[in-house]
Image: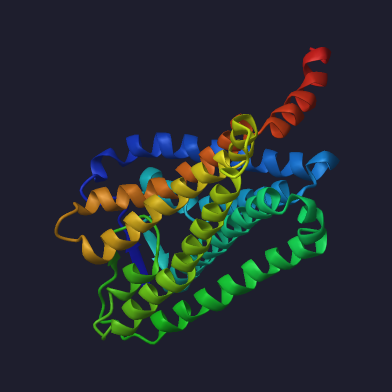
Length: 306
């Protein structure tokens, strides 16, 4: 069985124009995140929990963008709209897998800030290299366990020949809606995953920052308060960029079909897989002095040679 991905419904005439910023953002995302990973791996001073988690986030961003954007650009540039059922299901799995894993990484980064601010004397003891490795493995295993059932949920459905997906990439409900079978189980499981995995992550992140704020406002010095909160600024920006468009896309796809134009939803979903991956390394590069110093130090020999 072959499916047809039509890109952005209603905007087919401007696909080539839309592809230009998407391609640019994809290149910036790949180069920026790979450079960030390289910098963290090569610089011994950046082998701290905060930066190791950041390298995991950068890797997840690279994988998320790469699992979607090349096919998206192929649709926009070459009208390569055909995709096999197996390839579509594989893309669906990796998109949801990476999303859930990235959510867990953001939770780990919130926990890192909580320990650093609320329990600074125990920071290195709690978040040692072994603990960081276990957290990374747990994020991957949890994501796999949560997302693997999606494959069976779409395989169990009976399809009656409808094969047009009004999207630029394959995702769970987009495939399920092509079936002439009952998809209530798919809907319930999708909502359950969103609420009990990603929703739980958000609740724990909020709890972490609530305790951080309680600790910070007990510090008598305003200068010390601002310094403590400044270490959280980059992470808060990344959290907002990750969860806000994701939940907009999730709920718009399920409940906003009549109120939100379909091309707006698809366009937002397309931008979601490139904008946060592009901005994350920029945000951390601008707001984190240690990374700024490493970047300057890395490029200074090049400037001297030139």
